[in-house]
Length: 138
Length: 482
Image 1: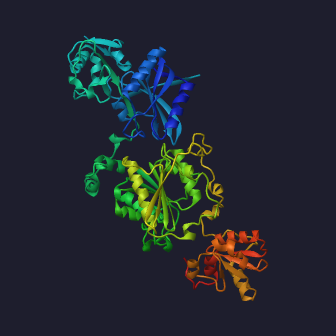
Image 2 (image 1 turned 135 degrees about the vertical axis):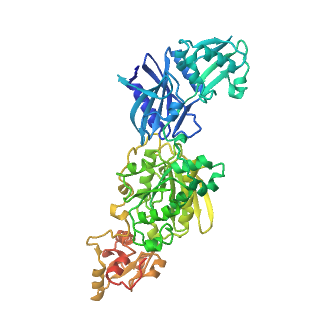
């Protein structure tokens, strides 16, 4: 299993975004190389289904994230989002909308406080997610 | 051959190529050929029924094919086709997880279901929703009943009071046979009778800084039906800190107020009132009275806003402060702005956790429970002591500082009526060296009156412990209590 390495500053930025967006979901792109995230790039949550339970990255913002990766010489490793008042486990909805090979980082934000942060990858047959280890580096 | 740009997550299936050239005359043909060439792509682009997955966006040059001719969109040499992921997700309890309606529920809610603004999905949202009512009193009664009738799935009620005869004039969730019962039990029975599909959770405790965050956590909307400032600030701050909207209402005499506070971008109660009024300035309903039908209007406004928030419909009462005058039958609306300097929801909040709200509002803890004597020192005397003084012919001047209509209900024989509000201009009627006893309903207003007279140089002013209610309990049970 590949695993994802988060520098502590990136880990802190994702958590801060989750707290800031609470009670809504936050989302953003993860840029990096070879499993090490260099940058968590916050994106607007454009869902029209109620941002407490949903997030949506617009195609335009997705393109922007790919472009930013190209410009900085990094790869788009995946996306992060928060689960306000819910555990850091992917939902059926997350599974239905998942893309292969991406790392999906989920941070649980309970009553405004960030809690567990986990990362997940879609199984090849789309049947489920595999949890991948997350390491923090200085 | 047409160029297709492959997004990062699909490159493992295209031999890591970010651009693939494929032939075809329409987008549909291109994708067909693409997935034939790179078989691994198919399940990620197409659902089992062969349709393009909803979160797969196909662009021809800069245009989404949804706004062209979808998969029939023609392509020609020189065009660039891009596959662009919509990245979406969410927490578990969303539409997919919404509870189904039973046959009985479909019948019960049919007037909702036929309106597009509610519909089956909206009714399922209501069923999944959890609303916490703070208090089962004047506001909580109609609010909880309408929320239950409307099909809100879980209703929590926080209250520690007992039904009293004086509640029945407005607290319509309770009936005459309920007098003496816990309000929670009485309310639960009424709600269950109204709609057995509703799950009623009861919390037999006073809301406090210690329990508020825990009590709020499972709920989606908090409905503030409190009658005092410490709890009102506590509810507001806990709503801001836990990110839950506060369907606010308050009532006094003939006037009511309502708003929705503490939504993500909306103002909170403190944006309007950063600090409470000085203690005693605003009388409680027990002191000032309340028009019985008034909480019906305000509580139902709170319930209306709660349901709108759950359904996500209409224009919520966010950033607007509704003031209702029952005597003139007028609604006024004030615009409210979120205050960037707000101590709790501003950009640099100074209140980041719940504080001691009784201290904040300048109220001693036992005053909040109301109707209890505040002075027990040598500055006070008990009803029996007063009776003894009268009996031995040393009757003090008894000044009743209640309102005339209260005085009509019951009084101590020989007392003078000077309502608290008139005291500043009428205290000159009193002799500064006389032996004076101040008296009101329960001892709170008279304590303030006592303080006032002392500040004017009166030397011998005492306060009657327990007010007229104490007098009736201990000396003269023949008079009615209110």
